[in-house]
Image (cartoon, rainbow, N blue to C red):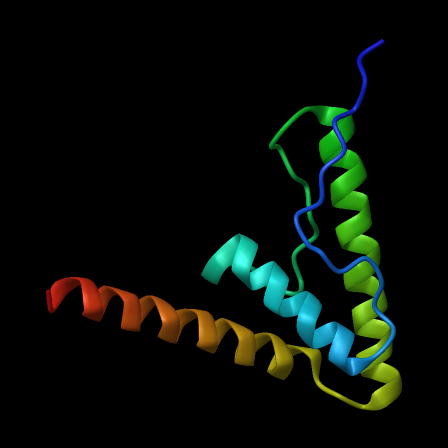
Length: 102
């Protein structure tokens, strides 16, 4: 029987507050870039089936919890997500601009 390789794509392991949600969304955007969307379920295919399922399940549970927290605090998770995506987009633009100006 193969042993699962444990890995985590985000440092955050628990989501309890809006601040945690913001950090989680930032980490997801850092890892997945502009292709990340809060409505997407994770189905990773990176290491092996068992390891990927463990990490996918963990991320999906955290994302579900993030939705619950935002709903209970009456905060729009999509707006939080868009803030992080816009920051990532601007970072990419700035990086490309600095590369082409040299």
